[in-house]
Image 1 (cartoon, one colour):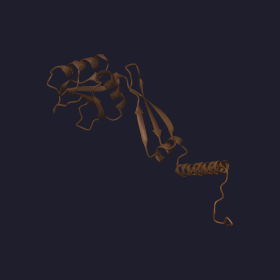
Image 2 (image 1 turned 45 degrees about the horizontal axis):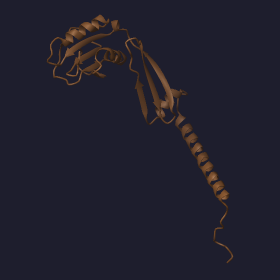
Image 3 (image 1 turned 120 degrees about the horizontal axis):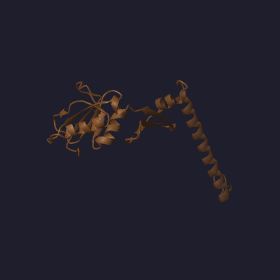
Image 4 (image 1 turned 180 degrees about the vertical axis):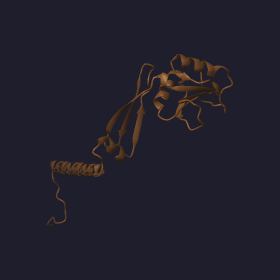
Length: 187
């Protein structure tokens, strides 16, 4: 036998060397591919890294930090994939004296909307006359108009922690924030 067509057994060090060479090759190809895709994804951007991070991301996560009663701003952090760049935007929260609130009662318990209206007024909010709301809600809600989301989050955290927060899409009630007390409201 002349050995043609047969693999000659080499030492284990040759196998390990070949394995390392292959792994390094895979890493190099991966880096080049990722770099090429990153450059390609960055084409057409306005030289604004935050803009390119948002436009090239397939997944975007927004985290809103829950404000305390002493916080005067709401912080939003946005992380975009695949670059893993993080941008932070600080949104100034209007003082209560610049926010108009109406409280509506969707429960059978009389007086709770009026009591919360009094508490909000005492905290400096501009309040409208409390009223009733139908249908009955199981969960309280804080609805906001326009760009009053940070103020709605602050009000919810301090006064109606059981409530959900959502944009308001109904008839004009003359308020920036509408609080609807549901069965979940504990007072």
